[in-house]
Length: 434
Ligand code: DOR
Image 1 (tube, rainbow, N blue to C red):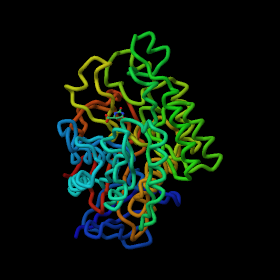
Image 2 (cartoon, rainbow, N blue to C red):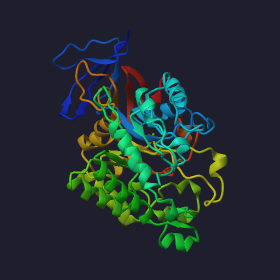
Image 3 (tube, rainbow, N blue to C red):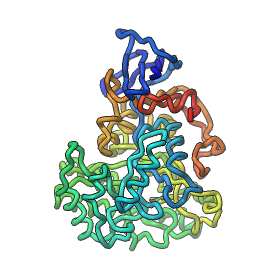
């Protein structure tokens, strides 16, 4: 057994801020002492002076590419990127090859997750093969521990099938008190097809096919209605338009059980970035206008949007180095989320803890192990952040097997210094320990 003390930092969790040493233990995986009241002897001491000790972050939306595209990412490399970003748990999306729509593939991903540097929670597809035609065996997958189902990469187009999926999820009883989350990539493909960026002034000027905001908003609207009809919660992935934020705000005001996430790229970048024709700026849903960025930020500030999720989507250099309209959509996100949120949102750290940790942990059904509070006896899953550290994002330093970050060269403030997963310091002084 090794105990590690993080000394001189300030704890920030749902009960506020206090300066204290925190001791974690890698055998029980728990927090064993918190100073200054308790004795804080430990085998190893790690400096946390000037840092904030936060509950480890939880990402509701990552693509780890395994099985099927191990050249772009593996569960191991993605988990290292996650740990470096302060994440202690991530929900892996099911658009793997083969698709994560069966017990066999869920077990396979869980198997890879055993050696990972953070908790890997597989999600599973809503429909077989993510084809939008027949429901996947949700009951069997939930028994294995799946708590989120999504066809991410595409939305469920058929309203009747989505209604059945909600009813199916609502009928399943989960013994541990968590619930099953239907997570929707909101995009009506009849409207978005042929589009490779946001439809607007920039798509016209660049001569690239556009996806209108309405392609997203129609499905947000429809799924709010289906949630109302069935009484079953819906989680909206990567909201990108002002209209979507307004719809979710209104649905929440009416008491509907809707939750939503937004990505760092949707609160920092606009469709003007596409003017370089660099496919690193191609993503689904696409980068939108400044008014949309402002609305997404406002949604994060006022609580309309519940969580920051990265949609970490690694692609190999070869696949991204194609003309804009042919390159696959997607951007890296795990290692830069905290810094971008800290730099761009102007929120107090306590709110960032809610958006990056406590609320996504609850939505993912991981609240027993992640999301705080930081107390003796609780699982030791922590991110230790230096809020004043100024640095420049460099794609060459990424632990991901891919390099497709749109933030290369961007100055940011706030850095994850140490990460603790199950009592083990998996990142110390900005370096992964394994
Ligand atoms: O940009 C995206 N990339 N959006 C998605 O929905 C899928 C993802 C991917 O898998 O690359």
